[in-house]
Length: 329
Image 1: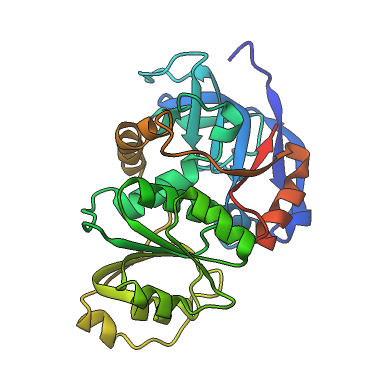
Image 2 (image 1 turned 30 degrees about the horizontal axis):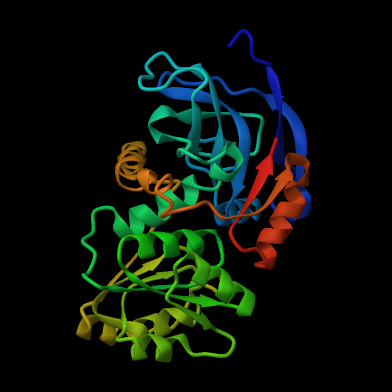
């Protein structure tokens, strides 16, 4: 690392709080561990867990960077002693353990993937967090029901737009909830079969009319939890990835038993490194070839400079975006 700067620009937090606690500061450039690559960041994705960490409710795991940023794209500029399979100058996207809102970030080499053929580094930056999350929870290690129905809440966001495309690509009938006509047109363009305006329509009734959902992916929580159970077909899986409307509810669990439902949830950052490496390998083999084939595409709402991190978080919290929000050092 003798040719690399000793310090770099990065987004830091003065304290937990609102978007106004974010600012750019000069901090030490990270040293890669033996299994790490050091990436010069082209762009970093903004994700829901970043907002939760900024508010003080999602502390980083032991040994992880205390700074925000869970995914990046960029160029490999240094290699740890034990790294194989990557070379200096490689264009990569990576699932980080924090610290992505910066000019450089050190990442476990096994959590990197090549920038998909045909994509530029900026648009590819929004892929890792949502693809690792959706693939690991919905597809990896699971047998998909033949001609199954997939209900996705929040279809216009980062998780939703990824889930819609993957569901469509792997043969599922996709239903998704949206807030307005513009979002409905957007999700339909990504492969959703039915867009449900949750302000005007009851997603339970629409889903039941379609025969019920075999898989439900939810980031809302609150009263959606009980309604998801009503919308589920027998032997369905309900997957909870966030609780934007709250996690504490009173619930009748009898239908879970009667319908033989599986209710699961997870957070990605705290999963063991070998699991993330396994997911990366699975994505590279089964999903990454679908990008040059034109069956998947990144969906970017906005790319803002690093010193606009506050604005990026405000935009994310407004839920007015369709697709991913990125920061570019």
